[in-house]
Amino acid sequence: MSAKAFTSKEASSANITIIDEGDKGNQAIHDLVVAYRANRRTGSANTKTRGEVSGTKKKMYKQKGTGNARHGAKTAPIFVGGGVVFGPKPRDYSKKVNKKTRKLAFQRALGARIAEGSVASIPSFAVADGKTKSFVKELSALTDSPRVLVVAKAFDEQTYLAARNVQWAQLQTALEVNVEQILHFDQILFVEDSLETLAQRSAS
Image 1 (tube, rainbow, N blue to C red):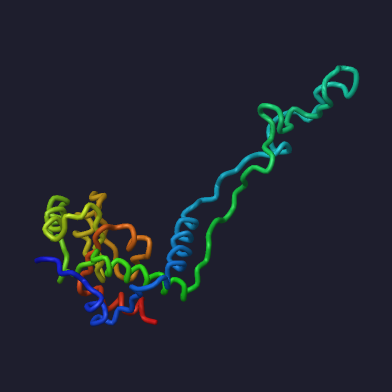
Image 2: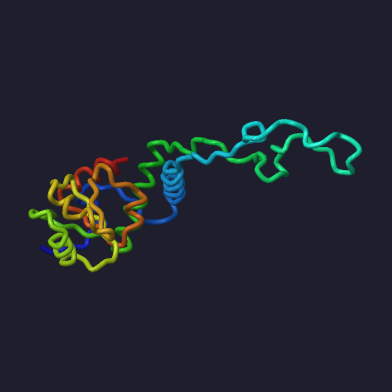
């Protein structure tokens, strides 16, 4: 089994809508990737204000007569162990991207990778024995790229098992593959059974 270059002509034959010319879709890709990364942030950073830190609220010394500046509690931000002014609080960083922008980004990302010759198609892909060695051998026979994404309609459990320890390769279904993954990997292999789902996802 060998990999066959997947060109814009093959994409058209498979009814996959792509954008491979001009700048259309570049901003959509940017917006979507920013949203992906923002949505992965936990937003759990938390600092304590002067009212939340542990410490006495007693005035440090009397107001007048000491020659020092006037101070209240030791929990003031200027002291070690005091509160933090305008520090981070737990928040939600997630961003929403509408369906039209997502589809445009998907079409553009696919088109760009196909245009640069980074996409190939294969009839099928499976590792029956579930062994990492077999997975590496199977993939190495198809491509020598340092980072490989294999997209299929579905993978069996044994194939997932064989791939789980291979950091330079990833298996993804056609229904779940996203723009960030399409842009990240050096080589993308489309199993033929994934083309119908990709066509549905890219349809205008």
